[in-house]
Amino acid sequence: MMAKHGSEKRDRAGLRTWSASHSVRSALPAATSLASLLGLGLLWGMVAGMWPSRALPPPLEVWRVLLKEAASGDLVYHLAMTLWRVAAAYAVAMIVGSVIGVLLGRHRRADSFFNPWLVLFLNLPALVVIVLAYIWFGLTEAAAIGAVAINKIPNVIVTMREGARALDHRYAEMATVYRLGQLDYVRHILMPQLQPYFAVASRSGIALIWKIVLVVELLGRSNGVGFQIYLYFQIFDVAAILAYTLAFVAIMLLIELFLVQPLERHATRWRRRSA
Amino acid sequence: MQPAGVAAPLKVDISEKTFRSAEGVTIVALRGLSFEVRQGEFACLLGPSGCGKTTTLRILLGLDRQFSGSYQLPEGGSNRVAAVFQEPVLLPWRTVEQNVRLALSARLRHKDLDRLFEILGLSSMRSLYPSELSLGLARRAALARAFATEPAILFLDEPFTSLDERTADRLRRLLMAVWAARPTTALMVTHNLREALLLADRIIVLSPRPAQVLGIFEVGLSRHLRDAPALDNLVSDFHKTFADAV
Image 1 (cartoon, rainbow over the protein chains, first blue to last red):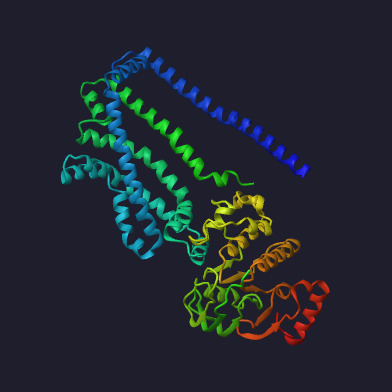
Image 2: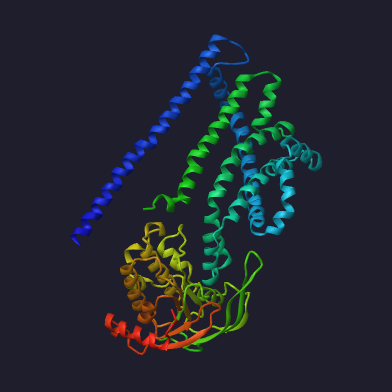
């Protein structure tokens, strides 16, 4: 009993030193990234200082525009509009793409029938989808979000189909023998196996989606970051263009750091604790 | 403890089961296989490797429906079947306890599992993930899952393979302990004669493929008397009856 207690204590102490060294190790890349970004900013400032031009404003100028736009409330409004479109298109694309992908992965005949459609949609240029969506469904919010989602759905399907093909039949047999309900099957057997594929689709998805959202806004919306960039393009205000772009990139970075990564860590906790 | 499977025995009558190989050749795995397992009895299907034991089990588990013939499962308990597969088949993303509870019906989902975990020596491992367990411990968790469902019948498919002999032996004793706590009609597939003689009430001896029943061996000896010398006697008794089997 004593020995067991002692080893337990030692384990806990080991855990603490491990987590301490772990936090140092995880802080180091963060510091490196920060220094790297700072270096990029300095380089930008130097180049802008050497060749002063309206086409390349210095970082401080961009920062001033950013503060001004933020104070007027415009920045927050347009960022929010873009962010909501990104979120809506992401949700639609991930749900529709996952369902279709899993179905195609499970039913070989449907897969061979629909595969040419998939290849067609994979190769359809984003611009064509957007223009057609606006022509067919009008300059509406639904058309805009739908067009973005359609651009992303084929990629999600391909990734999730791969995941569905790789499902382990032993778990399905276990579920049959022990009569797991549909809901339990999806939650405890299907989703955990598809999670890595979902994470991949989701990662590559969100970057693609926000780029397409800007095009959609430029072509047929009267708000959002894309609309503002188009506006400032017409009056050749590069500082404002950069201010809006960097603000949105910063938001996406925060989402990645504080939403996506913690969620992924939670979903793969059983892997990290493996002995 | 009331014995499960009060209503009916396990009746198996498979007239034929064939496989089609990749080249289109038809292989007969089972032909005219019929036997019964009495209620509350621990029976072993003993036969050489590849004779169709696992195929039989897959049919009884409802995982393979492409066969001609019929079978009748016993009733009682939760009216369910439970299985311990050749591999533990635990979900790696759920803890040991979650794995066990997931197999339970809604009525039993929150039942007290303390005693079961205690018998199997898993009390301190309930919150571990399967990747943190050794194969022997994972097998114990699979046993816990099977017994927790209070099944009408329990199927075991060579549950002690790829373990070292000491661990396998310990697990056999644990299986007997947990089985004694709630005697359940059980059918275990094995090609290990000593294992069958140690655990079973009756041994159903199968021929090589296509599997048929060669005969039944009754292990008359009470389980707690089956020590090493007694097992040696049983082995020679067995070989007297089944000269060239296994």
